[in-house]
Length: 306
Image (cartoon, rainbow, N blue to C red; front, side, top):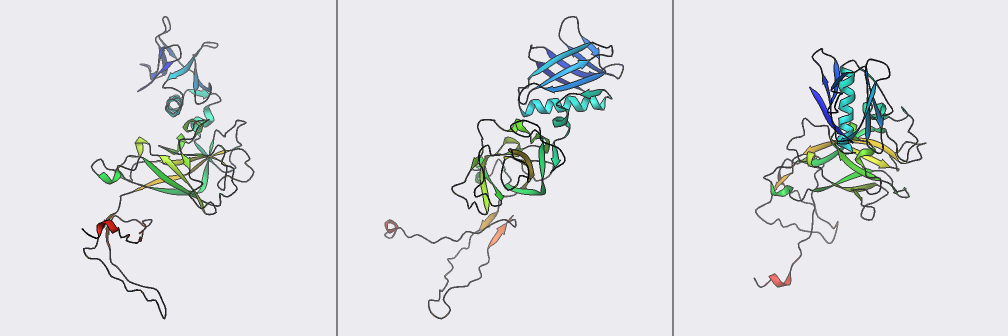
């Protein structure tokens, strides 16, 4: 097993277990080769970018490498996390200012003070953990063609909330809920403030990531990450917070079998006006959050002569 990355000098770095069963760092730099390690240090080197320092057993011998490939973002953060876990599993000392964010993906409210940065670097875990339903996708189902963007609803009174910096994203695993998932200047999700009842909820339209194209609800840990302020943010947190809101729950798209005949319903207009009729519909894969819309039939004058 080994972990490979390219540094900003273009050199390929490898972290692996040597023949002596000890952790080694290997590089293409002439005259260096492979070196045994006593410590691995991981530090931030800009937004969602990491620097690795490899310390040899002899004091004073250290080698630094700024990760360039994969580029800054979630993929580089995931690689830095693998480096950390690999070193820890090899009983090598680990240190650095990036240790907390790489080893502690989320904290409960009040467990940890936010860092002095524009946005928190640690995601607080929302209590209670929420569930966000999304339809399953299948490559041979034409009904999934329009699911490239989905809507996620956040309950609560959002009227008067500060929407600056707010953003929402679906992440592949809880530990991905970090500043790396959001663009500092632009939010890929759209807050539908003008089309929702802000006294009750706020709805976001979110681009559906490729990893969410699943055909079963098992074997995943997809989650929803929120950045900003609002009803979910704990009291006392003044700056925009990172919140791990909950888990994505996938469900199959319902299949409704329409009635072969038009149902005629009599409507009372005098003495207890109104109507009541029980209609049995056959529906396959209809979850509890399915809704039935009743709409009037609009007669088109152009069709009367056909």
